[in-house]
Length: 503
Image (tube, rainbow, N blue to C red; front, side, top):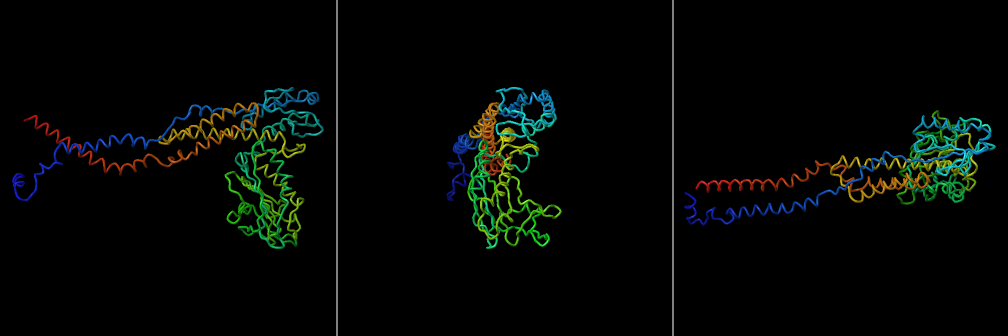
């Protein structure tokens, strides 16, 4: 039975060729509408899914990486020392020149000039004069005794240690904290156990701070801003049991070197009383319980030492309170706290990278000389500049390696601000190390903010393969039927055209 016969029956079915939606022009119009919608939606999809990728000043960044900050330093020999030893200037200059050649890393960023009269070009001018003893003063003077003035080797060694302190004693050491504009200093009195026989309730912390900490903070205010807080805690148990030792008729608790590394019980001690993003340096005065008192630090051979304090690198300092006060007293007076806070001041200077005074050299009053402060300023500025250069170079390298990493206007502005701040640091280093430090700090802050921008970090762990895995299941199920229908309709139209041509 053919289709005509089937349609003429009483079954009620129509011939498929006579259905409206089976007509060629309707079918093609429906198929074309799908493709038109897809084509019109492509620009919107492209705009909504495209990644903003602005151009970074790559050439400027690479040129900045090759630049170095330079601090001109002039050392003037006073007439008194020149008359005492006429050839001292040339001898010291020769020895210092040899030191620069042999230790280029130590003298990085230093342009040293020895002269017999004042020169206003240098950013730091130091004077060497003849004195009763070898000492340094706050006015950037170095007084040299007659004995040291006769030795060019001794004088060149002193000048080297003052201008470029050895790496082992400055911020290259692991104990020094990373540079920051702001620090919080937390002074805490910890009672291991608030028992009646071994319990400290109050302390004259304000007087001790004013005597030992505030003067040092005032000298370092050109580098950092400080916030000081103090607290007293009455229950601070140790996370381990100290080793018991017998010394004659006395039994003491010993702390090994391993015990010192885990002395801080972070799980049960609440040392930071405030909420802030600023780095915190802790200074803990620990009063052991009656069971663990006295508490001594022991050496590798198990013998007690005379040290009552120890420093935790980049964290702070701990002082163990043994016999510094009357056990029946509930108060620590200013006199009781003198050795404690004198030690805290020394440890604070070490944590902040303050270079020590060279051996055999005395200092005329004060906590910090201009020689030490200038050396610290130069060192911190050099570190900030190096950190900024490395961070900017890393940003450019990542953007070049990851093609789909977004670079927004905020990132680009931060990179440009970092480059501008680096340029200002180079320019101001000639006149003022303090200004150079300020600009280098801003450069490091801008570079770090650009590197850790959330828009950039989002695609560090999102490669192109992930994008294909997301889009393939979505578009494959839609595109395959449309493409197949388009091919079939095209072939049907072509066959119809050929048949019409033959007829």
